[in-house]
View (cartoon, rainbow, N blue to C red):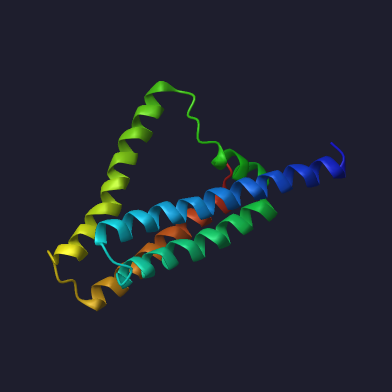
Length: 140
């Protein structure tokens, strides 16, 4: 493959990544804020930032160091039926994870101390860093 084709493939991959990144953040933010009934839901803004920052860094790293892995991760079509079922079920639980906190904010079901929120963000970021470390060590 010549350099022009490689550049074109990378450009196409970058477009796909950016579209998925921004549409994903819009959907997640939309779910959180819609169920919360307010844009004053600061915990949702914190979560979106905590998600977006390492996501952008990871995508940038993979685009530069392992574009084949990034391309593989962008392929959302699961070839095996059993795996598709697992992805669908996990998608339902993921949706629960986005609309329940919004409803909790709207109806004030709980009162979580700020220190718990901060610790949760730190644990989330550390977990994300471990996933990226695995990607960096093993493309499989």
